[in-house]
Image (cartoon, rainbow, N blue to C red; front, side, top):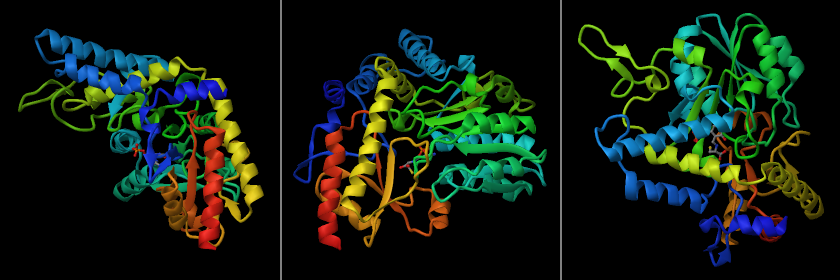
Length: 406
Ligand code: C6P
């Protein structure tokens, strides 16, 4: 495995640098992942050769750009195992994907007295759009409770379900705790009362392949930059029938069929939701990231990520004074913790001085931090290019931080 990981690391140029005089140990993959050469080259190649606007020009470059852009959509379709390429809508990222559903599907389908369920461990981007909607419609937003270990209370979820629930919008993997939620069971139960389900896949896609048809998800949202692709590009998957029945999101070019002052008609899927010139290079870069991943043994790499997490738990016990935050039985490779007696921000600064990049703070998940009565955590979020040595360097760094701070 070590040889394979070292080989993979060679594909990621940003990993090979010194930060504050020390070799970079990048453990902030939950915030954004680094990009392999394949992605950087695909973007650069697009701008060097095919750069043009899509679906518009009467010339060869525009045809080539359109071809690459639409091929990228098909790559995402295959990645999610969506039934049709038309079900893949390009967005700016997870946040925009969720906001589209809130401003279109939910505006049409959620009325005063209806309910939307989320979990108490959501990222703000899966809370605030629904709060805004509820303010406007008189619907109610209800969080499904989460246990002290960071697991969803599925019995409470079952009790919350009733015919007033129109949508269950749930994070697939928590960015703050690492919890992997039982989304298949959630979808089955929600569908039984007629509710639709949106999954926030921002933190899931980097770890395993997703099959939206097997899950029977109604909507699935993710960001390219957490999947080794560029920033500013993301995806909203939606079942064709739902997307077709939804009103458009933004108005402008591309999303129309015919415009007149008397009556404007809208374009077919997915263009109805893609007003304006899209992020063409972003889509091409994201497809390059997925193709890069398709060349790897993702099952073996997910097992490697599990060993990184298990080693973190072991080393935390050996070091002492570490309080793990989020100890669910089913977890992705996110180690969120507190160094007892130290503020997370101070720990982050001391680690950075040693070349170790982690995230500190509330991780845009303030409600779950409030529930645990903590201001935030230190979060090491691993991906497959991290090594056991990275984990050991982190804990050596924490040992120093402990000596300095306590
Ligand atoms: N979490 C983190 O460090 P955007 O910003 O749209 O690409 O993704 C938003 C988002 C939505 N849901 C989850 C579960 C997320 O983790 C994120 C982004 C980053 O944890 C930045 S706050």
